[in-house]
Amino acid sequence: MTATDFAQDLALAAAAAASEKLGTDIVLIDVSERLAITDIFVIVTGNNDRQVSAIVDAVEEALRAKGSKPLRREGHRDGRWVLLDYSDVVIHVQQAEERVFYSLERLWKDCPVIPFTPEGPQNPSNNSSPRVVAIDAAVEDDADLAISSDDFEEI
Image (tube, rainbow, N blue to C red; front, side, top):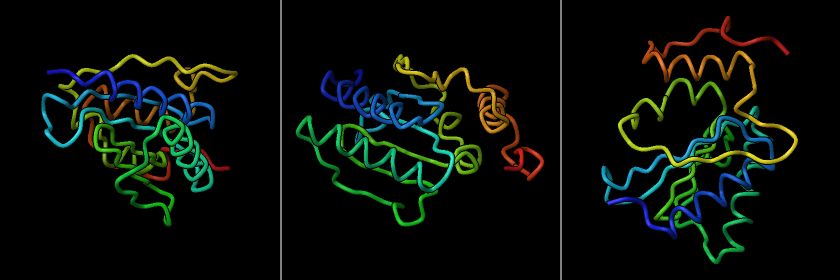
C-alpha cells in the first residue's frame, strides 16, 4: 500500500510552503507500508528558531487553505524541532543539529522517497553549507551521528 493521493497532495503543499520560506533539504518519505498512523513524513531543515517558526507558519497556512489543520503541534516554543501532525502527513521542521542527531532519514531509509523539486530563487539541494554536508554524510554513509562544533562554521 502506498500513500494516498490526499496525503501526497498535502505533503507536496507542505514541502512547497517550506521551500518558499527557504527551508532546506526537504525530504518526503512514504512510510505508509511501515506505519499505520501516518502515510508520509515531510522533513525540513531551518537555520534557526525564527526560520523554523516561519516555515511552520507557512506550512500551516498552506494546509489550512486545503482544509486541513494539525491534530497536534509539538516543539513550537523551543523552535529546534517542531512536529505538525496532520494524521495522513507528519511534518518535522528541525534545525540542522537536531536533524543530524536524530537522522530520521536514516531510520526510514528503507521507505520510498516521494520526489520533490523546490521552485524559486534558491534550490536547497544545491546548498553546500557544512550543515548540509554533515546531514548528507550521516544519511549516505550511515555514519556515527555524533556532532561537534567543528562540523559547523561560525557566524
